[in-house]
Length: 522
Ligand code: XMP
Image 1 (cartoon, rainbow, N blue to C red):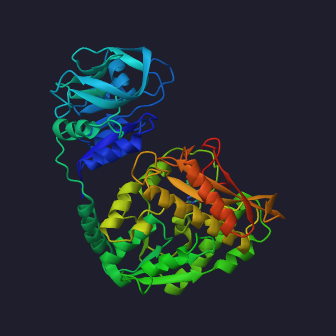
Image 2: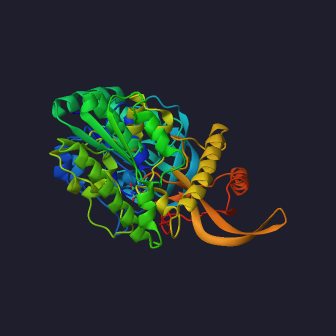
Image 3: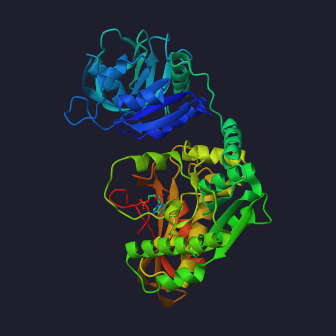
């Protein structure tokens, strides 16, 4: 299961996940790490190559993130992109300064030397540039391999030392031949053969899980989200009926979601496993009655969830393994230092203290979200489950501002279903970029504000709720900006919601980024 590996060293650029994804598209496994990763950790990971990302800083500023210059002497090929390119130039004795003319966006780049990364690239090629600093002098041993009218060093290479630098962004879609450049780096320079494939991951993992579990009993908390669904299917393929999935319907799911999950994983679905659906809706509504404070709501839902799950687990008795759908970004996040608690997150991560088991298995630990989706497709899980957006553990409970009631749940479910339906239609019509395309909204949903206002419908005064629509562009969900959805789409959604959903007479669009907002409302 050990694969060739490339490490992306994160200096705070916007496209880091994208770089990793492009590398994986070359069939090479790739991990993103913060630039604080130590040399020892790099040695232990034994990558075939390292990529420095872009970032917002200037290399000559005191506070700019750096990496030890020893990295250039390790004998591992390094590719610096944008800030990463400037850092390499600066640290190795070249010159970096503020460019007389900044370059943003689509730029024609002239290739001067095709002996390295540009082997298969046209003489003049369209690239995406985004910089205010530039490399004005290359370090000793480097040759300039590309330039633009205002950027003398759009790329440079020291092929003896296997050090490469690109001022342009090869990872974005707008760089027409960017994939060729990255492929040349990982294959020609780093010598990767391309041994990473989703099919082999699925097969390897099923085999490994079979060996690990033997004839033991396995328990899985199934949320219906993509991670837990893929983890559950992998295990069911490995050990069949030794697996029991418990799905708690807390009454805060999206419209029809409970039935959709049951249709796939229940007795009429295609998988061989034990499925238990617990309809605990009323218990959650009862406990949430009169509660308005967001953290309190989150705590109540989290606690109640554990209680319900625990009761079910007791009925099953002791199990050998608990399956968790932990994915790679979760591993990295939990490995970093402590930061302020903005919201207490609830997911199945809270379960281990409350369930009797011997070991946790995490079959998706090595994967990024898009790879989990590909594994899901490989396993034959339906598209609508595989492409499901992130959905918070407390569900609609935190998309209803203030007190949660059954009636409000129904309102937000209906509004959200219309919104999702119209976005899907707009994607189909090419009005909004689809999943996997640049500019696709990473998450979108309707929320119910606690605001009621006066309106007029059919000559009558109304005093009803406002629904807020949210759609964000984000790759890591840590920061986000509001998606510029086409006006015609927003208009259509608005009309449908006020016409079709009772007790709503106003629809607003949330234009706030994160920060200062968060993605969810509570
Ligand atoms: P925020 O609102 O903090 O959300 O900007 C960032 C991302 O996390 C999701 N989210 C959660 N996921 N349990 C989860 O598993 C939670 O309690 C939770 N709260 C927020 C949110 O949907 C977004 O994708």
